[in-house]
Picture 1: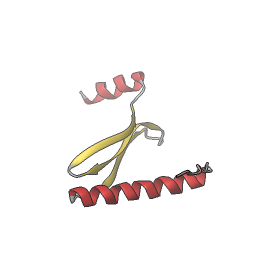
Picture 2: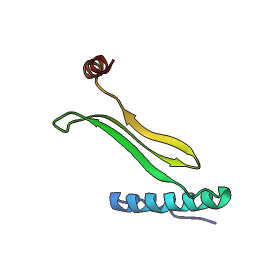
Picture 3: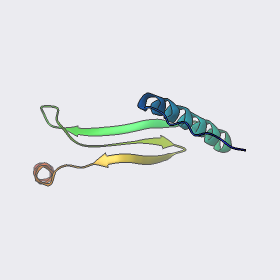
Length: 85
């Protein structure tokens, strides 16, 4: 059996990603009985709203998976830690 691979534009990639995530979620839910998945994220911003740090991920089956994160610049980190220690 031969299959053709269709390259997708950005909008189609987003649509495909959503469909694949849903398919995997349904498959895993049926296999484990867990249908409790939820997105989770948090951010650290300056008083003016500038993004300084954060994380994104999800919870599922009583677990947390972090997908992406970034931290504070070293100078800011020292200042923030110094203020709260």
